[in-house]
Amino acid sequence: IFIKPYTKNESVDIPVIISDTGLYDMVYNDFYIGEGADVTIVAGCGIHNCGEQTSRHDGVHTFHVGKNAKVKYIENHYGETESTGENVMNPTTVVEIEEGGYMEMDTSQIKGIASTVRDTSVHLKGDGSKIVVRDKVMTHEDQHADAIFNVVLDGKGSSCDLTSRAVAKDNSTQTFKANTIGNAPCASHTECDGIMMDNARISAAPEIAANDLDAALIHEAAIGKIAGEQLIKLMTLGLTEEEAEEEIIAGFLR
Image (tube, rainbow, N blue to C red; front, side):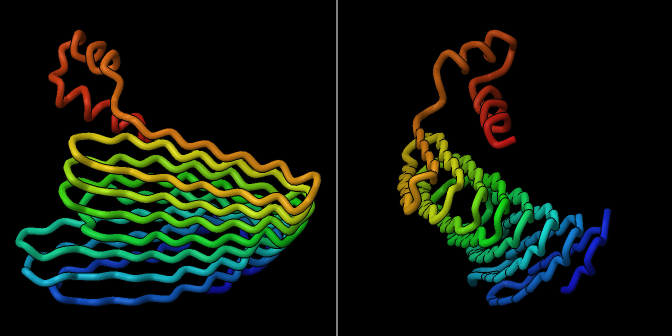
């Protein structure tokens, strides 16, 4: 998909809907965003599995963001199952940003996916290039989710702001791995916050490597349960404990 230089206020939608059990799907989308463009790209995948077999969707999205171009990328994944069949999604995102380019990623996967590997690689190659990532994942039952982020900052004055919000319920598990490498005067902030409930487990492994004296890299990780005082406060307003938990989670993932 080629977006002409200086294109403004346009959007591209790339939806996928899978409604058959036992279907495996693999798609590739390559975006070339011209110099000075300002566009929105929306990707969404929904799986409605009504059978007993596994339905799977894998996708590779590659973004070449041109000089001084601006892109907002929205990715939403959702699944539901009527029988014993499982839903699997493995999205791969590759981003390369030129001088002065900017990309904002808003990605979410809320329930319904039995297994997922969400793999994102970013190369900030141009001076002043920037990316902002807001990633949200919720798992329940026996689901498992892996989130992998690899960011290389080569451009002078390049920057990365990555925030991950994870909620794990029941017996589900999640892992978060982020590797940030600063090879030039640059700035990066990585934050992973997780809420565990029931018997769920979350692990976070942020890693940073500074190869330049003026590379300022920060990582933070916090995992815990819902604070009791938050539940009590909402319950005094008339909510049940379950309703209070849902309100807190909704606010956390907003």
